[in-house]
Length: 42
Image (cartoon, rainbow, N blue to C red; front, side):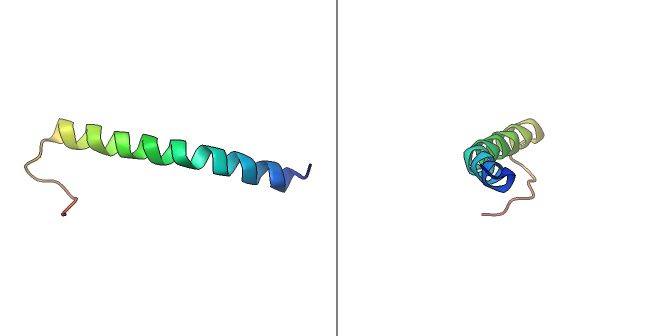
């Protein structure tokens, strides 16, 4: 197997985990900071 192919497989496997971790970190940050003034406007 080529190193590039292995890197692609690892990337595709890790991508959902990275997204999940990022969302969890944002939720924790917002919870600690409080819902008053947040940088995220929906």
